[in-house]
Length: 192
Image 1: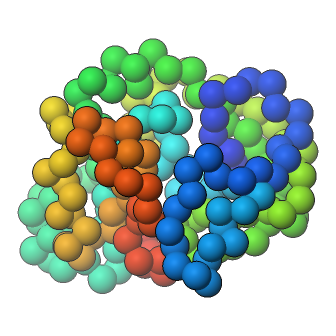
Image 2 (image 1 turned 120 degrees about the vertical axis):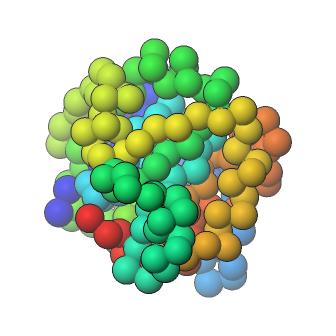
């Protein structure tokens, strides 16, 4: 299994566990996830992080429990694996952004059963670094259709569908919302 950390700093020699800048309410059983940790994502879910770090976005995809009606309404005849929505104001920033993708050794990471997210309680030395130089192209390579909207607000109701929905950094959206658990229920699988 491959794990990655995406960021805007090209010079990280060691990832040191740190507390989240903005605590997230995941319930009492998962409060420890606000503590000092190193965060990573698996290769299958790296598509969630192919944007500037602070870019508000909503990424949706069908799961094994998605209804035919929801699949048709949102994906129609599209062949994409997922759709990533960003606000119009972020489109040029996404095109111009420099993003660093660090490869991390899987040893020592714990699967938190939440959309490909893994954590380590210990410092981690990266095993590699690459720079996706064309983020729209990188999304396209992952079969992700990029769409922009004036605001992400109309997508709040997407979580009421049977699609998976990840809402990331939406506190930075024009109609920002407080930090919170920003993914559909953990345990739903991605349909390839």
